[in-house]
Image 1 (cartoon, one colour):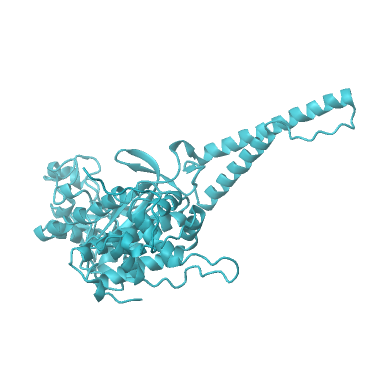
Image 2 (cartoon, rainbow, N blue to C red):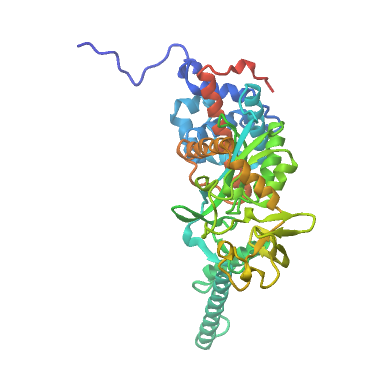
Length: 491
């Protein structure tokens, strides 16, 4: 059987064309063309002296293609520039080293934010990313820190004292040794080395002092956990255990385009709705109509914010399976909804027609929220003599109590809306919008753990992941023929 010629030392008569290295239908061509339409003004300019800098558009392309391909390490991207045809084609055979790639990523945070917004606007020009319905959600992504690196602030203080005592011990032993040697060899002898172990102990003292200084800057309490590796990471709980992590937020359109991406060190989501609403309208340059979010975002202030801004929101008080169900351990008793509130008189009327007036005010504070509660009761003794008390309360002495925090009106409206068939249908879309996006970013991009450290750098990494996700979505739509890139403006 004849074989085709095989020669690894082949010499080309004419130089090959770089464009022939990639097939005409390869997704990287579309990916590259999209980024050609993005304004990159403001990125690091070429040096006036010395070797010119790499072109920022090329650097941006290889970095984002890396994220889109699940390759985020600058060293691995450098390796791909030597072996992977798609990377080599994007870079036009340029070969920046990993330090240059890493510096480009960390030194251009504001401009990466700009690229994120530019890609969203380009997608909207193509008919994607409409603001009809938005799903907001958060996911915990592991920080670049180990579980063992976490200790409570008070424990770090104890460690500091131990480290200082170790330094004092080493110095004391060294002084004793010096005195002994002086008596043997004379006082003119000079030692040229530090006492054994002193340098390491001093460095440990300095490191712990730096950790405690950062803890003070971040407002950490004595019982707060802080990592020696990434002091800004928080210890967060997930279904499969607790890990050092950041809370990554994303707002997603019905075509799964990310139009808002941010990270927070707070493990809960309740304070993330307001910045998300502001961020969505700033980036998408449009009016938000509907938003769905899970129970983590529930809170009186958030419900008031939605109504005040005329946004049709869908946020339950608990999980989706509990919507419309009677809350409480004793469903046979009167519900809170059975008590009528008189706003003008600031009192409740119980089902038996008795007035329940405010008897106490209290404040419930957590690390991330604060509630001001008013408690309402009937006059002393009325509940015990009421014929309906067996349907109302098990507390025969004090009777039934109703609490209110000033946002009850908004909660009632939200319960009523979510309990309709239309409300359940709209809220049901949440899990098919945001959650698959997180799955795609974690599986396709490999974004299960951040590589960088510190909130500012983590924001860059999460934003790059979001841009890569959006570029893949746009690329897929173009390849499928559902949108035409020719319709997008060139910036």
